[in-house]
Length: 70
Image (cartoon, rainbow, N blue to C red; front, top):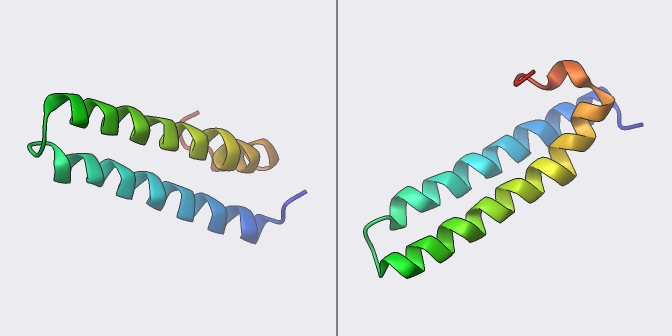
């Protein structure tokens, strides 16, 4: 099992990555075509979903009290 200190660091970095990916959408919202923006939005959504599924899910399984959405 992952130790608590590592879990805290993983969670912090994963949430920071999600925030940065979200900011990327705001930075590019009015640039390029609507189709390009939609493609980018879908790609960012997939990245965020992967972070949630593969990083945060592991942390929350070991330390459910760290999941602030429950």
